[in-house]
Length: 540
Image (cartoon, rainbow, N blue to C red; front, side):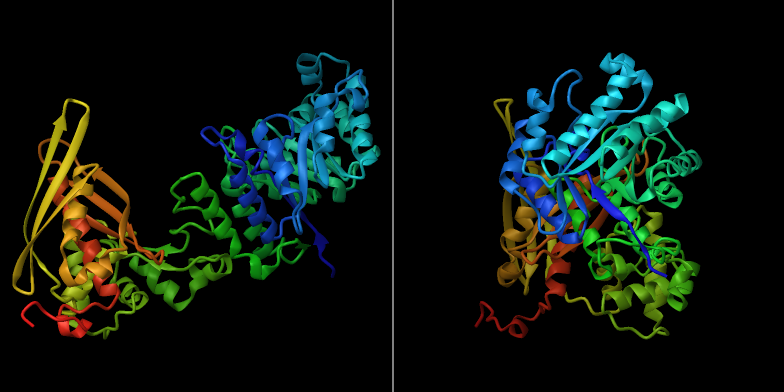
């Protein structure tokens, strides 16, 4: 049985721009558009030409895409004017795009209150706007704004607006749940009715996420007959966002009832790129990726409970609804006070630490993890510190250096400029050394001091840097305990996370910093014996 074609339309560059705090540059939009095109999407909506300089320049600079149809967004022409006498409308038509998607009112209440025209005038405007697009040999789409509210208020008129677009030759009539308040069962019923009047292969769905149902509503509309689905990467969008394509795309390509019924422009072997596009958007927005995002989050396939881990090791489908690799992700086995021996063994295997399952050290590692978590440690997501703990119990962690002590001083000059200075005393090869550092805060100064004079290790740790620093107070009052987690990265892009816990934030931070340095040395295969690294000692 031949599969039906389902078209995917991305609105990140326009709907996503409506998000509070989001302001794409032209280069940002070009980078995203090209990534979406490479993924295999059918349409990429670039923005609203003429509405702002960024969108106008984006269309002028980009030109076109290789596979996806670049789409310009705008509003229908003004009532009482020809298309040629509407400058704003002409800017949309003149933009170098292959398709045009116009928003049109389909709720009679808005036609009256917002547009101040008659219902018939609005319908005529929709027809004329579609005709003007087709006259430019461009693909025409009408996004019926507030369609579901309009349908519930006046079914006949909402359908009349949609039919006017279809009858005028629009390739797609998109039903928009603009305020995000419609529920999946309503979407299914309404779209099922609409397809009796407009063929499903001309119907699209555009949902907002105000009830956390945008993805569910999109799937409901597809089941009811819609054959185009719109959304944004990471669900970006105004208020609560739009349907999340990062969740929708894998569902459509992998899940029974969709994968076996529909084909899209995205090849299965390109599906792992969904994660890359998700991370690219977060990087552009300088946002921390959502670790718990479905399919692509760092914790999407993370297993913590001992019973769960044992089951996953025997049959991954027990707790993994799809193979992690199919979406560019990987399984993560967490080690915590909820863990069992199987967690520890799997985590060690993932870290390429070979150990016999019967080795007493395995039980010792598990006991230490549970004891330390009582003190406030949490090894979820801080694999580097866990690996160091395990290596120490196994007797495999070299003694790279000893810490003699450290100090931190903070001074304020003239009440406007604060300076943080730190010194760290170490013993390397039996020789005391002292490092000093100045930073934009006490932790940055400590980091600089710790790594300032590590002698033969300098070449290895010189490229690493601290990229994230998080502090959590675990309880309140005079005995509050501070948990610090830091993330480090090296020149190769390898990142790792470490942890420290203490009543004093500086002590907790130094512990995490020290672990970060030691992990880098061990991970790079550096020996604590100078000769093993091909280096000479001072005595030589």
